[in-house]
Image (cartoon, rainbow, N blue to C red):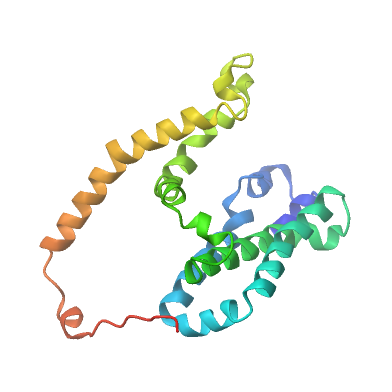
Length: 203
């Protein structure tokens, strides 16, 4: 609803922050889909495997189409009634399907590359990169600069990755270790001691 309201300029100026391109409210469905996928994998792994892996080629093509087709229509300014409210949703759903499928079928097709050691290391740094990348892919004019190589694509990839690695290894990982230490030291609640651990595995 907010995507449509922003596109049609229905909101008064005081409410324009709600439809800022980076507004959480315009993209929360994508985050929700990722969380929903985690819950489905945890509680219904066998059913998810059947949905996504019995016909992997067909599912992969449908997910890829969900990413590409709405994007192409939006770039061509076609089917605005569909692309304005639903393009980010379709993209998120397509990416979530491909991501879950790559977890369940790590040796199938191009998913081998995603499950390689290099891709795994990039995944470890992905959240740090998400936090820091905006400093480097922003317009140089934001910082009063002309066009230095480290603020131009693809040059900014190197410093962004370097800063992300420093952030992860010097700041985040020590705090993650501290959290793990506190969890080991914390006494278990009675309900946790009595509850058996259930591990769901795909067929």
